[in-house]
Image (cartoon, rainbow, N blue to C red; front, side, top):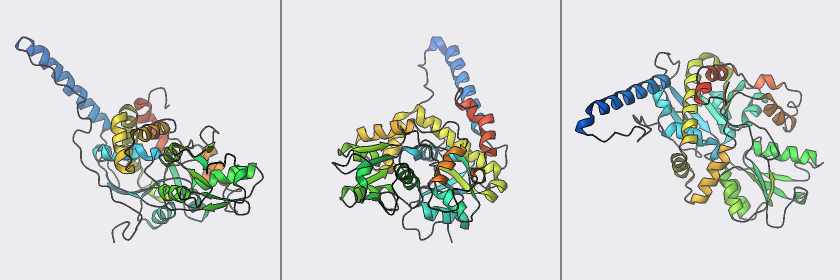
Length: 368
């Protein structure tokens, strides 16, 4: 049976083999009879530049253990934009990978990774929950570990304390929305489940809808839904980025066995992602076009704000920070979490190799 068969909350995105994802990068100089030699020299320089660029991007000399990957992601917001650009820009196929990318709820994604129907989950804290539940799921990279979450209230609700006895709309159980709210509640002497109720949803869009319909007094969410709520005039109670809250989401999570058996494949995958990240940073208009395609947003102000929100959280160095895992463990509802060692939830060996051989050159001064 094909992977993801029967999943209702998913969509299939096919990788297209773009021969020239950077259209217009090399401009043909005007042709003049008197400058034939100059034109030839310019063309030769361009060809050599292109050859070196392609040679640096290829991994054909390295045998991939697995060339077809099933990848799940939690959402299509700003934190996932470089992944979508990597897909649409043809960067996976350039490295010999065929990637089937699907949006799937966090809990279903973890189940898929455990069963082997999903190879990679680009998501948040659900991977930690799966590990605590007995599955050997680990992070091998952290695309984002600076939270882009915002907590909103209905009009007239401007403090966290004002949510006592009320409900907050969020995404899946154990996802980073729940973790952030649990941490805030704990620091203020409140208890989730007793003082504040959480309403769970499969997707950020569903969580936003519940809030907009007035069925929840609070909403904890990421872009672009944050930008929609802000545009409608709902008061922001907490900007978790400004609070300095660190939590992995999305991170690249796999089973430990998969990482051990497919190191070259994971290396190629992470390098292709970084190619897409570079394109996302350098080509704002293209990135916003891709964002519009998958979020169905048409408001250019919201698209621009979503892009800017992403710029402040996308990691160039995707090394996993154990403190971001510790934050999840401290505020998890799982009784085993607080005593767990963060080291069991990640392995930085592959991303450190990618950093040395590739990312440090792609982002000089930002990655060591």
